Amino acid sequence: MKISSDFTSGNIHCIAAAAPDNIRLSILPDHDSKEMQWFYFCLTGAANASCRMVIENAGQVSYVDGFRDYHAVASYDQDTWFRVPTDFDGESLTIRHQPTRDEVYYAYFAPYTLAQHRQLINRARESSLVSYQSLGKTPDGHEIELLTVGEAGAGKKTAWIIARQHPGETMAEWWMEGCIGRLLDSDDSVAGKLLSQYVFYLVPNMNPDGSARGHLRTNACGRDLNRAWLEPSEAATPEVFVVRQKMQQTGVDFCLDVHGDEALPYNFIAGAEGVPDWSPTRQQELDGYRHHLAELNPEFQTRYGYPVAAPGQGNLSMCTNYIAQHFGCLAMTLEMPFKDAANAPEPQQGWSPARCRKLARSCLEAML
Image 1: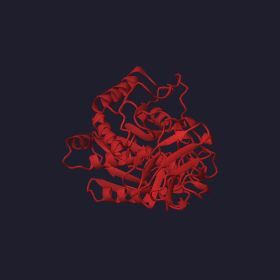
Image 2: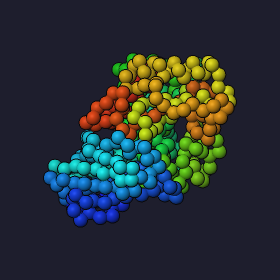
Image 3: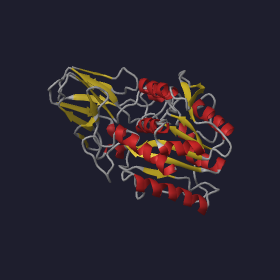
Image 4: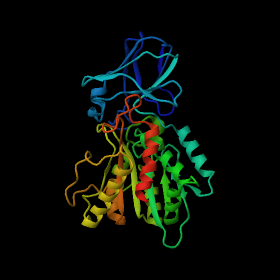
């Protein structure tokens, strides 16, 4: 029997694995950071055994409430992921499962690896609607990739959608897969109408270094990209530096920053109400988008979300606030759960890649 995580996006330290019912583990923190919560590992040699895997430092993670009422995901083929019994006592997270095969993977949420990212980019580039650009390199040497969908023209606006500033929030790139798929569907009237009005600038993965390293929130330099928008560093946060530079060239009329929330079991949108230039008109735009999305997709809701910042107190180092203030546009942060959606539960899979993709389709329709 063996525990391993020596693969892209993997994260776990095996303390002991002498018996299937006493596997002791711990999560590794992000490089040069105290942030930690993402885990992804493989168990081999335990087919048909009753396994008990205890993550002993779960009470020390970045978002302890994220493990309350949470169930880990498992997969035999890394394609279909399902939830397994999981308990949290405030200190340790215990995963119980009797695998039916010799090799099984466990993760915090369904991973979206760099290999999957490469396939997503390559599929998109096959479309005549798409142009590809590398905006620069990350500290680890990965490309910072931009897909432009549609062509600029008279009267057209610019829509920016970015995802996975926090690499452990893999649901964000599953969402991007659904977004790209709909925009490139030549038979989709919603996509056609949107592309007649907008050029879309898409960054499917803002943080490939953190994604490869198995980080929760930071890049290779231990920096949280979503706290770097006011003064990005070309050396420490080049991902934000080059994307913001490109935004200055194109302008921004609409921006959606796609994330996942560890603790709240809901899909919701956070706005930029705390920025200095907020107004009743901008509030109406934000409320209108939320309202339409909730009508289109019952898995989205408007009751639960983050507290609203006081007037003028919004953190301008965060993407949504910076974009809303600097470009004077509707900018929003979409949050999806690591758990199930409490208002529309599906216990077998919880919140899942398929549901992420469907929500993306609804988000585009709400935009229209």
